[in-house]
Length: 153
Image (cartoon, rainbow, N blue to C red; front, side, top):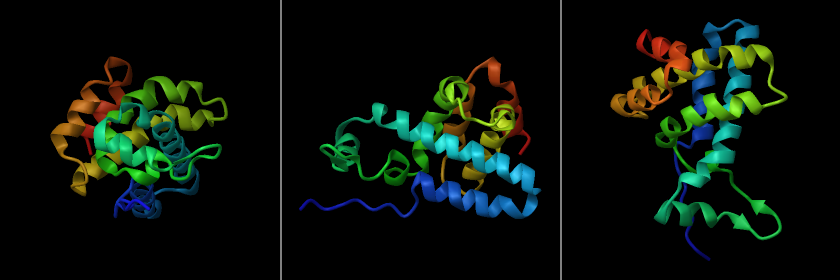
């Protein structure tokens, strides 16, 4: 049996940590929007993140695949917050608009929630600031709100 890589901070755990940190400062309706947005973001990374993997990371992820059953661990359960910057653009430009079950408040507030998450990841030193700024710059002018919110954190 192959050795399994276990991360202390996966995307899923970091999102939970962020929500736990943010919850006391949010009203219940706003907390629900944060929770909904971050659930969709995790679903987006799970659906898209594996496509970008190469080399050893691809082997690690594919080791979780079971024929006929799919992946026993999702992308967000295997990889850490360093993968988040690369997934922001896809989430905001592609995934969010196609999420049929998404609450309209979640869709509208998603750039602000993601900006808050990004700023927190930098503040916690989970992601270098220059990497996060580069990822946000790649989003483009259609999501200026995210760029402004990140700068104002």
